[in-house]
Image (tube, rainbow, N blue to C red; front, side, top):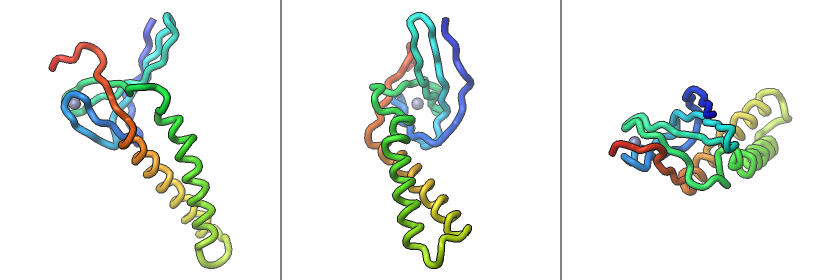
Length: 126
Ligand SMILES: [Zn+2]
């Protein structure tokens, strides 16, 4: 039995294998099946309406966030905390936290654009 969630948008890099459209905010949803047990993330192209999935399952957005996003966030937070003038007040913490989040998300998107490849799922009518 297959179950799907609704499409939602988050920051993730996507390039459609059918039409070549690329975006940083592609709609995606999760499909699960119990027999055989399987979880699959499907991406929707907003240009040609083709559904795709990530080729290879080792590197996915969750793994990249743990392996690259969190270290980038911590290094940037510590670096900005060290470099910002004055003591670590509320404003310095805020700037360091926002800077860390921006650097982490940008780094993850860059790695995704360099490593992610997508394949069409379903018949595809093109
Ligand atoms: Zn497309």
